Image (cartoon, rainbow, N blue to C red; front, side, top):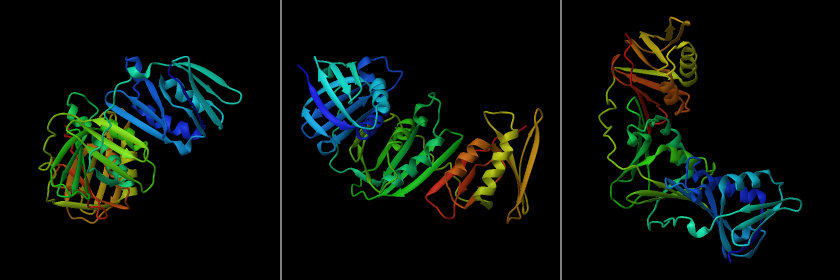
Length: 374
């Protein structure tokens, strides 16, 4: 008969449950995959969850448990166990499995009796690691994702574009995301002795879930790469994601190398001008606004017959002229990714891409395609 018994502080258990539950999909129709597997061993408590797209294992070592009395395992409905633990008082929580597949969760004054599932029905997750993982700083990795993931496509018509392309060559990590209307690219130097070229695509939504589990610390993140999956290891968390199959489109020739117009602008001034101008755009899908450069005057404007029009002007250092329209939403996303005092708008003509850079951060490039207006 399966049994299990332990006592653990609420905050310790809840943190691990919250991390593990990120692998549970509310749309999953397979009962066992809506649950969290508790596996208590001599070295501590392992928590597992999977939706076949993402699998997560969180570990609470024995020294963080108040007591460990009897090892065993069970699968419990993820939605219910997380909410129960969240709403219990901040105290020691006793967890015991009785009568095969029943879990008793209790404190001094509260007791829940939950029906569980046979843990043998839970899928066998392959969480093996490679011998030589790629090591990257946790904070650097979070920046990489935050500065690129917004440019992934939200449409499944081109599945590869819903992911982020990771390419590794000669000690350089090249990260690219595009939805075919905009592009984000981040270059990062990494310590990798293996000369093998790597070119993989990881679902953007999976990477977003991973970043939510990472603290703002200097701890390292391990990347274990396989032919059809990638495993991330961070502290006591293991995060497994499938890879998207196919060849990511070549983007090296999309970003122009030379520009006729280089405009250095204040981050705050430009962002706020575009943000205000977007208030009067009638097409909420494109949010089209116009940039007009006439010598040293830069104007941002939008005009909606139903609503009205707005014009905002600032002085810049230039002797060029251009009129170009673009999506305010795409441009705001691109500008926001820099978080620098100054950014540089790079342009050639009214039909060529707008490239956004920063003189303070050459590793990041954003690109937004213009919108043709009648």
